[in-house]
Length: 90
Image (tube, rainbow, N blue to C red):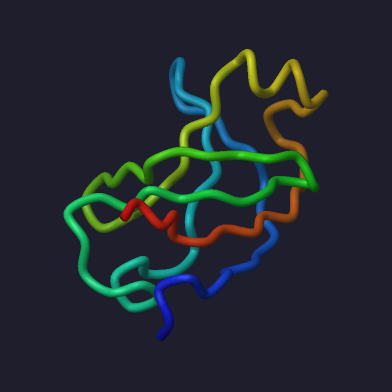
């Protein structure tokens, strides 16, 4: 697949302890190839987002800061549409 290919999915904003995130329901490695880190850009419900995917065991996620959630009027358990692409860091 092309590294710039956009991946879209619907999910809920989740929280575990102090961490708020969206789970990534696909393999970044299969979608974008092998990378030491996955720097992504895109939108959540149309609001711009940028970050690095985290991983626990084999599950990937994108952390969301409390400030980002407030600025975009989103909360834990909100149903959201996510569109992400691998950021070109050349």
